[in-house]
Image 1 (cartoon, helix red, strand yellow):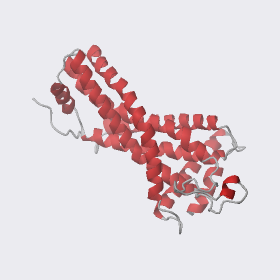
Image 2 (cartoon, helix red, strand yellow):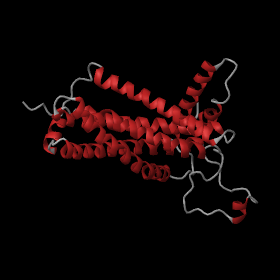
Image 3 (cartoon, one colour):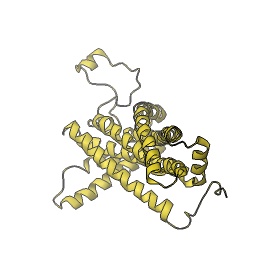
Image 4 (cartoon, rainbow, N blue to C red):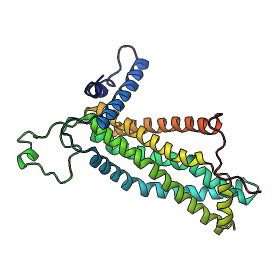
Length: 297
């Protein structure tokens, strides 16, 4: 199937439920998301002749995601870092457990998960509604482009070709895949810094001891997981937002669309997070211990 065929089928294949009922509609929806993803890959590997460079669109999309996501993720992790520090002290029998609880709790699970939810919410309220009319020209137009006065008034048809849905999805998915790990890393650093401050000021735990105990339990897979989950959570949320936005076609309510996309994205992130945890921390070889340095004796 060509990319044009996948692009055409993608938005329409997830419309009203067929006579077969909800199970068949769910299968059609998943297939449509896959077809849109395949079309986005095709837009990256085999761009249409005469199309503008995709890099500029990706940079513009990633810019607004980071500009909106960095403050939110940072503020949320101020609370998470202080909460984990106090919880580690009151829930454990020794203060030196604070470093591993705060650092590993953020790095392994909370930071990529919360950053993914923040990014999913941003995509739900912006990306999905803006793709409700995928044929509208100029969705990824250069910011400096100014339409003719008659075009702006609707008196003359826009001379630009309609936007390519596969290319629109590709730009947003790639941007979210870049923004996800950055947001997760920022959250882990902010939470870790706040945890060190709270531990020193309220629990009397020096920062060197906090960090030393944290590094004793630090695995290479923790860093890889932070990056991998950031890419997966961001890309998956963006693909869902694009798919649902293209499906809507301006016929439904934008608030209901954003709410649906947010719910689907959160559920997908939870499923991916659970799958990664079971694979990386509970499966056998090749996922054996990968300690960066052995514990101090």
